[in-house]
Amino acid sequence: MASLREELNKLRAFDDPTIEAALNIERTAVIFRSQVLRLLRPHGLSPAGYNVLRILRGHSPTPRTCNQIKADMVTPVPDLTRLADRLATDGLVERVTCPTDRRAVNLKLTPAGSKLLAKLDGPVAALHREQLGHLSDRELAQLSRLLTKARGGTGADTGAGPAGE
Image (cartoon, rainbow, N blue to C red; front, side, top):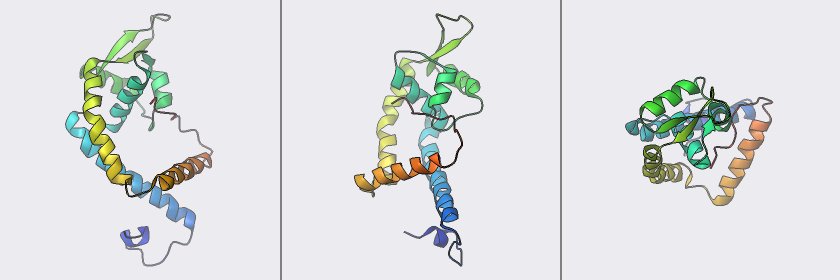
């Protein structure tokens, strides 16, 4: 496998290892995201829509508010309401009136949403194995620890939390 310097046709080595690492993370994220997009697009889903469905499945049968979903998303989206509208129009989620606050609306996974997720579970897992299967379990754990540590050094709150599963 070519180094990042070689992939970018950079003549000299990076002056700063932090820049090389940051660019490596960004380049890898772009490649992985592109592959996920290609997998989900034929099913009418974006990565954010897929993430919302997985969050709802992880909390099923309890409905979730948009704020709860937003806090659990891997990649926060600026307009979760519009995404929820699209998922509801597609029959993948159902809007449920909150029993304690009739002004609030919760989201719940529909049987169609559950069925679509079940259909995608295998292909998504296979894609992730294709992307990372050449790493040992120990290397994967180390990679996860290092990425978590790197995020901790940013001082920024991404608004993203655990994905519910």
